[in-house]
Length: 212
Image: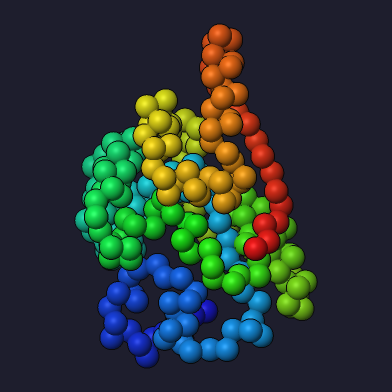
């Protein structure tokens, strides 16, 4: 929806490529946002990484626009790809300078942006219903498009990869923001269950709406 407003400013090539905060878009649009209902959505960070990898590996439009990123995913397994992304995330690159910078950090687009509502992808239909009712428009059924068939999310993560991800501070902050997922406390629980030799242990937390 912002594209029609931003197109006159597309001489700024970065605007075509990278992700921006609402406040950064509004430096260009110069709108009075006080009358707007401002919302966005977040996604389970574990599932989101698998989705990003799948898209970069299979999406032809993405491959045409960002061949280097696409080839990296095509040439490597999920674990190999993510280890490369983790290493690049630690490089001293300015935010928004590269396409890798947004992968671990949804939080940066939400905090201090004066948003009215943050939806969760896992609850997208119910949250979209809430949005429609709030702004007074007819509710519609959201179509499912651009999906990529893949294995269940947990099958992509080895213990080593999980440990590496939990060393990435921006990823840990995403867990806390999106799901009240306090990693240190949950790790203590799993460590206490080590003697049971469980194949898989999962803690599900659920919060339908997140308001900021």
